[in-house]
Every structure is written in C-alpha cells, then in structure tokens.
Length: 189
Image (cartoon, rainbow, N blue to C red; front, side):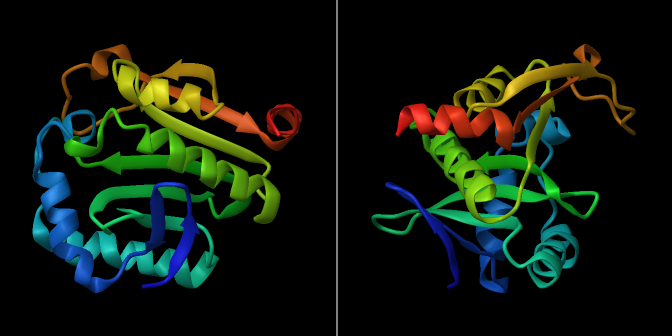
C-alpha cells in the first residue's frame, strides 16, 4: 500500500488490483451513483478493464496526481475515493472529485479529504487552479466544494447519451486558485 496523504481521520493511497471488489461495491449503491449514472451500477468488467488501468496510467504519467483510495485512518475501512488529476494533462489545473460510500456521508470526510488535497496541490505539487464539477441539483456535493473553499463559476449544459433525473438543470463548475487560497490559508494558520 503506497500512502499518498494522511489527514486527521483519512489515509489516501494508490489503488491496487486488490481494490476491485471495493470499487464494485461502492458503485453498486444507486444513491452513490445517482448523479453520475442515474443510479446504475458500474459493471465489474468496467472497473477491471477500464477504471483501474486508467488510475494506474495516471500514477505512471503524473506520479502524485490521480485517483486515491480513501480509508479510515483508524481501522482501515474503505470509504471511497478522491480524484485530484490534471485537466487536459496540465498539472497547473487539476480536477477535484470524490465518491464515498453512503455510510461515510455526513461525517465531513469529503470536506477533510478535499481540503487536504487542495493544500497539498497548492503547497507542493505546482497546482495553480483546482476545479470541480457536479450536477446543479447535487446540493451535497456543492456544499462540500464550498466548504473546501471553491467558489461557483458557472452553470453549463452537457450532452449525455442518456438523460439522468436532474440533468435538465445543468452542471455546475466550482474553482479555487492558488492566489485566492494562499491568503485564506495564512489567515487560518
């Protein structure tokens, strides 16, 4: 297990091939995938043949930017994952994302992990801008973005092969720049 980042309650580590079952189980919960696939589970073959190879490729190409398995620091229970990966291959701008098991919702894990990734990105990884996206109706994810320090940028429309309930309201983008984050971090310290 290669640990990437540790917070007060979380360990973020690289995924391994042994994580297939945990990822399949995570995406089998229709509430977890509600705003992603309309609640449809991700097939095991997609996890094995598409997702994990994508994660491994990002580790190879970017080393410290990609997808990270999230576990409880105490006990090691799998909680889900965080994404902190380059947009269009450019390390200066990264996308923040997260997907947690329903049992982990409402405990502040998404905010804690997001804040830690943002701090790491701005202080040690050369990141200049963090962006995050979700469906406009996903109020829980929007709250996490705001608590992590990101601000609303815009609402936009995406074309999808299949409509998901709520997608008619569009997608939202949130962002935070290193220049805006640094004074806030200094005041908080």
